[in-house]
Length: 90
Ligand code: SF4
Ligand code: SF4
Image (cartoon, rainbow, N blue to C red; front, top):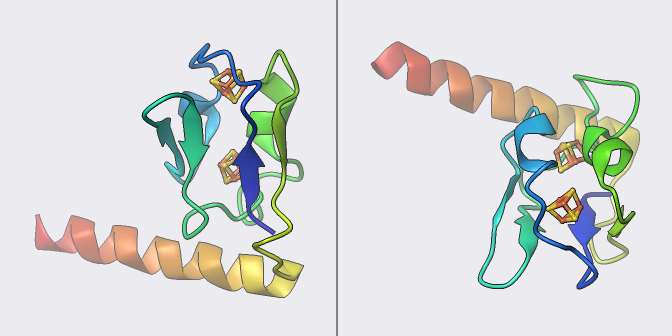
């Protein structure tokens, strides 16, 4: 599952730089997670980095984006290929 940020977010900005996939950004009112980039940190870390740093514990698993560990790992691999292809074009 990808994670999502709840309205309790205080816009502290701590989580954005912790995400290895660049999935977190500032939205119109609170920070948000792009489900196409969130792998629950699978492929990078054992635990979700954003949930570990959030001071108000407002990041939860998103029941609307249910994925298995295998699917999350495949997403991680796909993101890696996108980054590599982008780098090779520069
Ligand atoms: Fe990024 Fe990991 Fe948080 Fe997903 S769980 S948003 S990949 S830091
Ligand atoms: Fe919001 Fe938590 Fe991220 Fe801070 S760490 S911006 S409170 S989601």
